[in-house]
Length: 402
Image 1: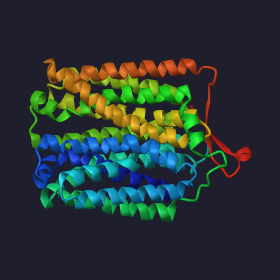
Image 2: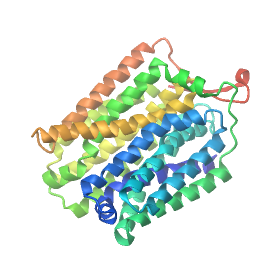
Image 3: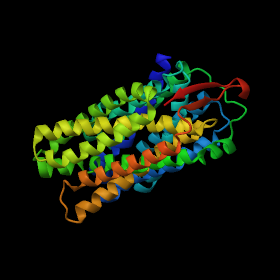
Image 4: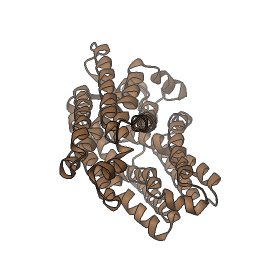
């Protein structure tokens, strides 16, 4: 079990590295393919679009494929997408390659989360899922800075080759360590789509889009906020982003046990504390040490939300949790786009570089209101079961969360 979870964490590490490394290499990529830096920024959008499209699409296509085989196919597509990015001769093909690389992102996390939850004893599912997510947070501490430095020294293509190598290692580990998990007779695209129609799943997705949008309203503009208000140099901001990743890792570590004990209270607390931290950052951003402490706390509270939302969607999708778990990452990418857009609006309106903090806090509070609404609607079902697909429906195993 530990090696299987490690394999899933390595997959998450590769995904986190490739998702954010492009942002740090935009000047080098722009020079390499002959476009402006703002135009090269569309590559970030291409990847995000791939995530949004690929999560439900690939999960639906693979609805009857055993989980291990599906993980291997998705990891293979991840390798191909990043190798194609490294080989792309011009901007058009690089844009297509980044879209291709983003396609398996959500499905890998969704299928991986379901697989992880089946590797452990009842009552420890959230802890297993959070261990997979640790790969994503560690990528922000190690993978993204390292790939950015590699791309700056050896050329931007080397960063994508490095991610390709990580993908190959992950593929080998998945093949060796993840056990076979058969799909039940109830599996299929119709069952998955029917589960997505549950109103609690819809509310959970809305919480992810709006509530986590508050996190990205600040994260997207963290570097210019620090350089303009705190007075930090550009060379120091990479270390600050790594500190943000440390906070995210700490939040992920505590999210698993808390979610296993009390799913909804953990979600409520995470959103409320995120809103409070964002308001606090509005006042501390002008002073270096208080700003760094607040940044770490924002990262922790952002990650504290991820695991309970993931487990809530898997619980409410019941017989078909895979597509809901995958679509959660489409929701997070929509949160990324929406939060960045709203943060940019308040800056452009002349409200100052600190304004995204208040805008983000407002989004987190709206997300909290949505989460409370879902909780009130769900009061008749005090405990939520994640149904684990097995070879036969009558004997299927259940995990209880919440």
